[in-house]
Amino acid sequence: TTIVFGLLLGLSDKFSSRVKSLDQFTWRSALIVGCAQAIALIPGTSRSGITITAALALGFDRIAAARFSFLLSIPVIVLSGSYKGMQLLQLATVPWFDILLGTVLSGVTAYFCIHLFITWVNRIGMLPFVVYRMILGAILIAVLLNVSKVSSRVYLVAVLQQLHGPRLPTQTILSLDGSLLNLGRDWRPLAAT
Image 1: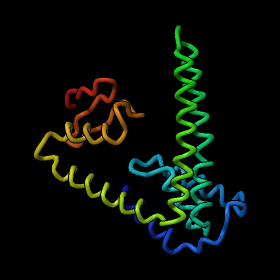
Image 2 (image 1 turned 90 degrees about the vertical axis):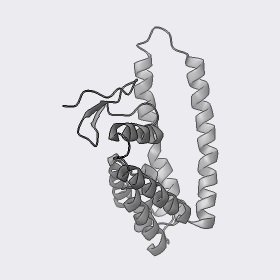
Image 3 (image 1 turned 180 degrees about the vertical axis):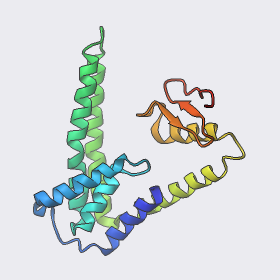
């Protein structure tokens, strides 16, 4: 999926008419791009990448596609932050100052990163991101093809930790050799079933 969606981004960037601006987004366009965002539930799919791809395919220019993609992330960020905030209210002690400071700093950093990204995309296009996804996809394929040299569980957990950090949204997955892996705090492999 990493390679496929990277190629789709490259094709959308190369063959799109790129004549529409952000103020030309209609309810239909927004719905199509929003539905494309749901494709990001597929592992290896970038949420911003797939929404930018969809917007480019609809004829929007690079800046409009990138801005709408970032605007589309706001409800997700606010809702997930609110959900976590509700969970924190149930705890006895919460470091609210640290959370507020982290939120403000991440917001300021995100603003500058988005500004830099949009400037960069306007100047050089999507090719660097397409190349990045091709290289990442090739690395993932190479890792998966070499799993016979080392336990597939060790490789799979290492790859997942690199891609998603120490915690994943799912708690249990099926590894390549058919055994179940517990993806909780300690990443212990469970007994093969």
